Image (cartoon, rainbow, N blue to C red; front, side):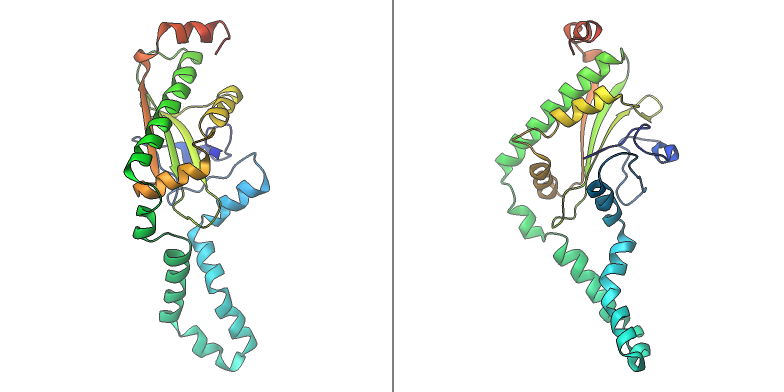
Length: 224
């Protein structure tokens, strides 16, 4: 899970947008300031051009081994396109039938309800801590549709005021990490829900005026 906020990426220009939800996958490249090598490698793997180059590497290898046939190998675009299609659509992604078999409608509803409940809890505590009183917050959970590699999840808290992506404190980021993907709705299970819904973005919204007084009081006293 990569929590995107001004504190966690070096390029703040990537956070500019005009309407919610702000999407990143396939639209903007964001690089984590922190996080282990696995997260960074997974972010790099999401770049389509790099995957295409990896898929076509055997053609480059054959051209180097059989130089007399290099021109013929380079002039086989249909085969190259077929290789890319096979890797991207048949290997890395699930077929529509495989997606439908991941979760039945009841399981999708149960997991969706759990995600919504957790999202509202997170937004309530973030809004109360920040003493925000007007507007709407959105917890945006965006996942890669690549199914046969480790899940990649971008999480942002977006505000209609601006609109803008909130600058989350370390405490807020810890809250998201501890709450959002606790069992039974782990990040891997969330990926199943994402693929079954055929929608890479899940949005949970909360009007700030709906935050109860006891939640604001708990935030003021340091209990939340």
